[in-house]
Length: 254
Picture 1: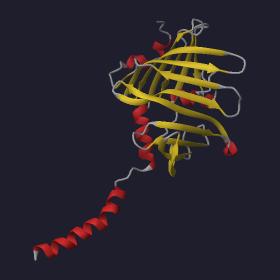
Picture 2 (picture 1 turned 90 degrees about the horizontal axis):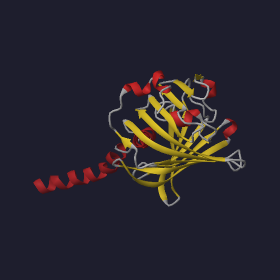
Picture 3 (picture 1 turned 90 degrees about the vertical axis):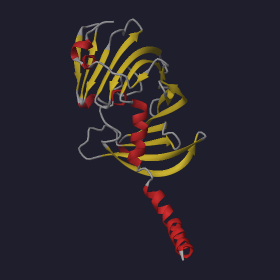
Picture 4 (picture 1 turned 135 degrees about the vertical axis):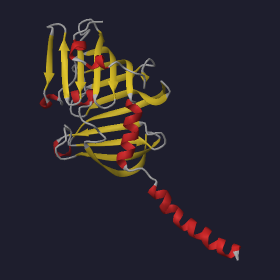
Protein backbone atom coordinates (compact mmCIF):
# COMPACT_ATOMS: atom_id res chain seq x y z
CA UNK A 1 0.00 0.00 0.00
CA UNK A 2 2.77 2.46 0.84
CA UNK A 3 4.47 1.98 -2.55
CA UNK A 4 1.14 2.36 -4.36
CA UNK A 5 0.53 5.73 -2.70
CA UNK A 6 4.13 6.83 -3.21
CA UNK A 7 4.07 6.61 -7.01
CA UNK A 8 1.16 9.10 -7.53
CA UNK A 9 2.76 11.46 -5.00
CA UNK A 10 6.08 11.48 -6.88
CA UNK A 11 4.26 11.91 -10.19
CA UNK A 12 2.30 14.87 -8.81
CA UNK A 13 5.53 16.49 -7.54
CA UNK A 14 7.15 16.17 -10.96
CA UNK A 15 4.10 17.77 -12.59
CA UNK A 16 4.23 20.71 -10.16
CA UNK A 17 8.01 21.15 -10.31
CA UNK A 18 8.13 23.34 -13.46
CA UNK A 19 5.56 25.78 -12.06
CA UNK A 20 7.46 25.88 -8.75
CA UNK A 21 10.71 26.72 -10.53
CA UNK A 22 8.96 29.32 -12.65
CA UNK A 23 7.62 31.01 -9.51
CA UNK A 24 11.20 31.32 -8.24
CA UNK A 25 12.41 33.18 -11.35
CA UNK A 26 13.46 36.77 -10.89
CA UNK A 27 11.29 39.58 -12.17
CA UNK A 28 12.89 42.05 -14.64
CA UNK A 29 13.07 44.62 -11.84
CA UNK A 30 14.91 42.15 -9.61
CA UNK A 31 17.37 41.44 -12.44
CA UNK A 32 18.06 45.16 -12.79
CA UNK A 33 18.45 45.54 -9.02
CA UNK A 34 20.97 42.70 -8.82
CA UNK A 35 23.04 44.30 -11.55
CA UNK A 36 22.77 47.77 -10.00
CA UNK A 37 23.69 46.47 -6.52
CA UNK A 38 26.70 44.67 -7.99
CA UNK A 39 28.03 47.86 -9.58
CA UNK A 40 27.28 50.15 -6.62
CA UNK A 41 27.75 48.17 -3.43
CA UNK A 42 26.58 49.69 -0.16
CA UNK A 43 29.51 52.09 -0.39
CA UNK A 44 32.24 52.65 -2.94
CA UNK A 45 35.54 54.55 -2.89
CA UNK A 46 38.50 54.73 -5.25
CA UNK A 47 40.12 56.02 -8.42
CA UNK A 48 38.69 56.04 -11.92
CA UNK A 49 40.13 57.36 -15.18
CA UNK A 50 38.09 59.02 -17.92
CA UNK A 51 39.31 59.42 -21.50
CA UNK A 52 37.24 61.77 -23.67
CA UNK A 53 37.63 61.70 -27.46
CA UNK A 54 36.06 64.02 -30.04
CA UNK A 55 37.02 64.73 -33.68
CA UNK A 56 38.76 67.93 -32.51
CA UNK A 57 40.38 67.14 -29.17
CA UNK A 58 41.17 64.51 -26.57
CA UNK A 59 41.75 64.67 -22.85
CA UNK A 60 42.11 62.41 -19.86
CA UNK A 61 40.83 62.94 -16.32
CA UNK A 62 41.76 61.12 -13.15
CA UNK A 63 38.89 60.97 -10.66
CA UNK A 64 38.40 59.99 -7.04
CA UNK A 65 34.86 58.80 -6.34
CA UNK A 66 32.88 58.16 -3.17
CA UNK A 67 29.33 56.81 -3.13
CA UNK A 68 26.88 55.80 -0.42
CA UNK A 69 24.00 53.62 -1.58
CA UNK A 70 21.73 55.26 -4.16
CA UNK A 71 21.47 58.62 -2.40
CA UNK A 72 24.93 60.14 -2.19
CA UNK A 73 27.92 60.57 -4.51
CA UNK A 74 31.03 62.74 -4.44
CA UNK A 75 33.54 63.09 -7.31
CA UNK A 76 36.85 64.98 -7.15
CA UNK A 77 39.07 65.52 -10.20
CA UNK A 78 42.72 64.74 -9.39
CA UNK A 79 44.23 65.69 -12.76
CA UNK A 80 45.00 67.39 -15.10
CA UNK A 81 46.14 70.47 -13.19
CA UNK A 82 43.66 72.73 -15.02
CA UNK A 83 40.66 70.82 -13.59
CA UNK A 84 42.26 69.65 -10.33
CA UNK A 85 39.91 69.88 -7.33
CA UNK A 86 36.82 70.45 -9.46
CA UNK A 87 34.20 68.54 -7.49
CA UNK A 88 30.67 67.23 -7.91
CA UNK A 89 28.28 66.35 -5.08
CA UNK A 90 24.87 64.73 -5.17
CA UNK A 91 22.67 64.23 -2.12
CA UNK A 92 19.37 62.57 -3.04
CA UNK A 93 17.87 64.74 -5.82
CA UNK A 94 20.17 67.75 -5.38
CA UNK A 95 23.47 68.24 -7.20
CA UNK A 96 26.29 70.81 -7.00
CA UNK A 97 29.56 71.50 -8.85
CA UNK A 98 32.48 73.41 -7.36
CA UNK A 99 34.80 75.25 -9.77
CA UNK A 100 38.09 76.10 -8.01
CA UNK A 101 39.29 78.42 -10.78
CA UNK A 102 36.53 80.89 -9.91
CA UNK A 103 35.97 79.61 -6.35
CA UNK A 104 32.29 79.16 -7.04
CA UNK A 105 29.74 76.50 -6.10
CA UNK A 106 26.95 76.00 -8.64
CA UNK A 107 23.74 74.12 -7.95
CA UNK A 108 22.67 72.04 -10.95
CA UNK A 109 18.94 72.34 -11.75
CA UNK A 110 16.97 69.30 -12.98
CA UNK A 111 16.81 70.89 -16.45
CA UNK A 112 20.59 70.44 -16.79
CA UNK A 113 20.77 66.74 -15.91
CA UNK A 114 21.13 65.90 -19.62
CA UNK A 115 24.11 68.24 -20.01
CA UNK A 116 27.52 66.56 -20.46
CA UNK A 117 29.69 66.18 -17.38
CA UNK A 118 33.08 67.86 -18.00
CA UNK A 119 32.57 67.67 -21.76
CA UNK A 120 32.22 63.88 -21.74
CA UNK A 121 29.53 61.67 -23.29
CA UNK A 122 28.25 60.94 -19.78
CA UNK A 123 25.43 63.29 -18.81
CA UNK A 124 25.16 64.61 -15.27
CA UNK A 125 22.37 62.07 -14.68
CA UNK A 126 24.45 59.16 -16.00
CA UNK A 127 27.35 59.87 -13.71
CA UNK A 128 25.73 60.88 -10.45
CA UNK A 129 22.55 58.82 -10.91
CA UNK A 130 19.88 61.33 -9.95
CA UNK A 131 17.37 58.82 -11.28
CA UNK A 132 17.24 55.22 -10.07
CA UNK A 133 17.13 52.46 -12.67
CA UNK A 134 15.46 50.27 -10.03
CA UNK A 135 12.75 52.55 -8.64
CA UNK A 136 12.06 55.17 -11.33
CA UNK A 137 11.39 52.84 -14.26
CA UNK A 138 8.95 50.12 -15.26
CA UNK A 139 10.83 47.01 -16.40
CA UNK A 140 9.90 44.58 -19.16
CA UNK A 141 11.82 41.49 -20.24
CA UNK A 142 11.95 41.71 -24.04
CA UNK A 143 13.99 38.60 -24.82
CA UNK A 144 16.96 36.42 -24.01
CA UNK A 145 19.78 36.41 -26.54
CA UNK A 146 23.51 36.09 -27.10
CA UNK A 147 25.38 39.38 -27.21
CA UNK A 148 29.14 39.47 -27.79
CA UNK A 149 29.40 35.82 -26.76
CA UNK A 150 27.36 36.25 -23.59
CA UNK A 151 23.88 34.95 -22.80
CA UNK A 152 21.93 38.01 -21.70
CA UNK A 153 18.56 39.25 -20.57
CA UNK A 154 17.28 42.12 -22.73
CA UNK A 155 15.22 44.45 -20.51
CA UNK A 156 13.31 47.57 -21.51
CA UNK A 157 13.10 50.40 -18.97
CA UNK A 158 10.40 53.06 -19.37
CA UNK A 159 9.95 55.97 -16.92
CA UNK A 160 7.23 55.84 -14.31
CA UNK A 161 4.85 58.84 -14.33
CA UNK A 162 6.26 61.71 -12.29
CA UNK A 163 9.73 60.19 -11.83
CA UNK A 164 12.89 62.30 -12.22
CA UNK A 165 14.00 60.56 -15.41
CA UNK A 166 15.65 62.29 -18.36
CA UNK A 167 15.50 59.39 -20.84
CA UNK A 168 12.39 58.32 -22.72
CA UNK A 169 13.53 54.69 -22.74
CA UNK A 170 16.53 52.51 -21.99
CA UNK A 171 17.30 48.97 -23.13
CA UNK A 172 19.74 47.08 -20.94
CA UNK A 173 21.49 43.78 -21.56
CA UNK A 174 22.53 41.90 -18.44
CA UNK A 175 24.59 38.73 -18.24
CA UNK A 176 22.29 35.87 -17.22
CA UNK A 177 24.95 34.09 -15.18
CA UNK A 178 26.41 36.83 -12.96
CA UNK A 179 24.19 39.89 -13.64
CA UNK A 180 27.08 42.04 -14.84
CA UNK A 181 25.87 44.77 -17.23
CA UNK A 182 26.81 44.18 -20.86
CA UNK A 183 25.19 47.07 -22.74
CA UNK A 184 22.89 50.00 -21.98
CA UNK A 185 21.12 51.93 -24.76
CA UNK A 186 19.71 55.41 -24.09
CA UNK A 187 16.76 56.65 -26.16
CA UNK A 188 15.32 60.14 -26.62
CA UNK A 189 12.15 61.41 -28.24
CA UNK A 190 10.67 59.49 -31.17
CA UNK A 191 12.48 56.33 -30.04
CA UNK A 192 15.81 57.74 -31.25
CA UNK A 193 18.96 56.03 -29.97
CA UNK A 194 21.15 58.76 -28.46
CA UNK A 195 24.10 56.81 -27.08
CA UNK A 196 25.28 53.34 -26.11
CA UNK A 197 27.25 52.28 -23.03
CA UNK A 198 29.18 49.03 -23.45
CA UNK A 199 30.85 47.17 -20.59
CA UNK A 200 33.83 44.80 -20.84
CA UNK A 201 36.94 43.46 -19.08
CA UNK A 202 35.19 41.78 -16.15
CA UNK A 203 37.63 41.23 -13.29
CA UNK A 204 37.76 40.89 -9.51
CA UNK A 205 37.82 44.25 -7.74
CA UNK A 206 37.42 44.37 -3.98
CA UNK A 207 36.05 40.83 -3.94
CA UNK A 208 33.41 41.24 -6.66
CA UNK A 209 33.50 40.59 -10.40
CA UNK A 210 32.60 43.75 -12.29
CA UNK A 211 33.34 45.17 -15.75
CA UNK A 212 36.31 47.54 -15.41
CA UNK A 213 36.03 49.10 -18.89
CA UNK A 214 33.02 51.31 -19.75
CA UNK A 215 32.72 52.72 -23.26
CA UNK A 216 30.07 55.40 -23.87
CA UNK A 217 29.62 56.12 -27.59
CA UNK A 218 27.43 58.85 -29.02
CA UNK A 219 25.05 57.67 -31.74
CA UNK A 220 24.29 61.24 -32.89
CA UNK A 221 27.77 62.84 -32.79
CA UNK A 222 30.25 60.99 -34.95
CA UNK A 223 33.62 60.38 -33.32
CA UNK A 224 32.48 61.22 -29.77
CA UNK A 225 33.36 58.57 -27.18
CA UNK A 226 34.18 58.48 -23.48
CA UNK A 227 35.93 55.58 -21.79
CA UNK A 228 35.95 55.02 -18.04
CA UNK A 229 38.41 52.60 -16.46
CA UNK A 230 37.82 51.32 -12.92
CA UNK A 231 41.12 50.98 -11.06
CA UNK A 232 42.02 48.05 -8.83
CA UNK A 233 42.11 50.51 -5.92
CA UNK A 234 38.32 50.81 -5.76
CA UNK A 235 36.95 49.43 -2.48
CA UNK A 236 33.36 48.38 -1.83
CA UNK A 237 31.32 48.16 1.37
CA UNK A 238 33.75 49.95 3.69
CA UNK A 239 32.50 52.76 5.98
CA UNK A 240 32.68 56.32 4.59
CA UNK A 241 32.41 59.35 6.88
CA UNK A 242 29.20 61.22 6.14
CA UNK A 243 31.13 64.53 6.12
CA UNK A 244 32.48 63.53 2.69
CA UNK A 245 29.03 64.24 1.24
CA UNK A 246 28.86 67.87 2.36
CA UNK A 247 28.95 71.28 0.68
CA UNK A 248 31.93 72.16 2.85
CA UNK A 249 33.90 69.24 1.43
CA UNK A 250 33.27 70.54 -2.11
CA UNK A 251 35.76 73.34 -1.44
CA UNK A 252 38.38 71.19 0.31
CA UNK A 253 41.55 71.04 -1.77
CA UNK A 254 43.70 67.90 -1.73
